[in-house]
Length: 376
Length: 142
Ligand SMILES: [Zn+2]
Image (cartoon, rainbow over all chains, first blue to last red; front, side):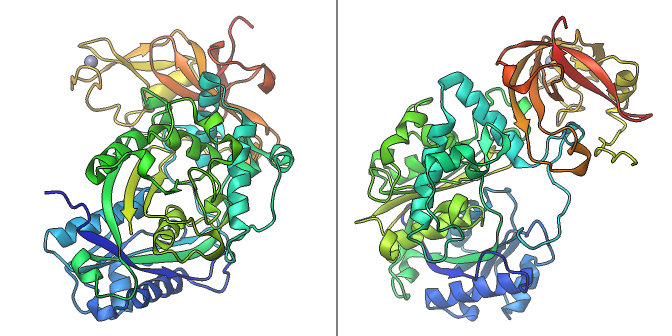
């Protein structure tokens, strides 16, 4: 039986964000968790499920240590979860499934990123001989996919720049965004190359910070502190991790992920009022707009022109500034933002009458994908 | 000044023949004994089932022609590791080999801005250390 509308995201928890040399990973997990539980109108005693993503620069905080730190005597679900960058939305999905299965009633999902001030750690997911060829981290991989898209469809760097400019404009309306100076297309084109065709301003920030949320049944959510944000649809799609091994190198799994979510929600892209697309780079936004069906394959370049993704545009996207301009908290930047958009508490950057949101997470060299469709 | 070592691949039991061949300046692939499907030896899962016909028989080592085309590429400007400081900007490409598999390699002997999709390339070998020689690519017939 479908889980549609049966579960809801209640509390959302923030921490300070940006450069946080004085905060430990453990402290950030606790701060985000406490704030989410309080925001839900619950106490730690009400939480009986915990899902944690290990912080990649300091994996010392685990599901069991967070349970102990919060003083929760018993849980019916306590697990570390790793689908790389896709973990945020995926954890919300697992939380709903676990509650539906009767394992628990209120699940805390928590995340911490500490890449701005943590010591550098060796890159993970280095398969084959990539490092010997100078193939480091996500940016070169994503830029090869971006190049393939440009070669096939004629997408341009200036079109990618539109996304960066739009999201910076959104960040300027967000008091907690890291980057609050407007940028122009010249700024984008003149920013230094990271891995061509991607410039610095095509790439996400580096940040410290934590986020958390609580998932409960819709029934329970009604009596809590904020209006519930219901889970309408969910989906995941994962392709072979190594880009050269994928039959179609432009397939990121987002298509399958979106299809599942739309099918469950019973809506189409036209029904979506606000979008949160995982934006490790501007190119991630391009490919997801196409794969999720917001435009046809190959047409996202022209699609993002003319301000379509701005807050007062046709399809407001990454309204907090996203990972490009607000903060790099992986999928959590967009996830928490769309929940707040649906609650209607985004102040200056509020999308008018936002009823339905779609948010995605994407990881593993843009090959791991999760989607949530939410409504107020 | 001593040269900073690039991060080298680990030689495992299953990849040893690949790296030994590279030292002899040969590019080896794995060929399915049942259907003839080629795989790159460094691809994940290479020692298990054939993704084409599900054969689980030990595949054969087969010498590649060394010819291929550039499927896509990036020009890395950022220095992610000090060993690449003098090389940047450098080209990392996905090369589509004639036999079917794709592989990561650097493309040398051409200006990055002159590279085009589907450009024909051929393998050459870069001896990095006593143990590791990297298959690399350059424009065909150069
Ligand atoms: Zn076979």
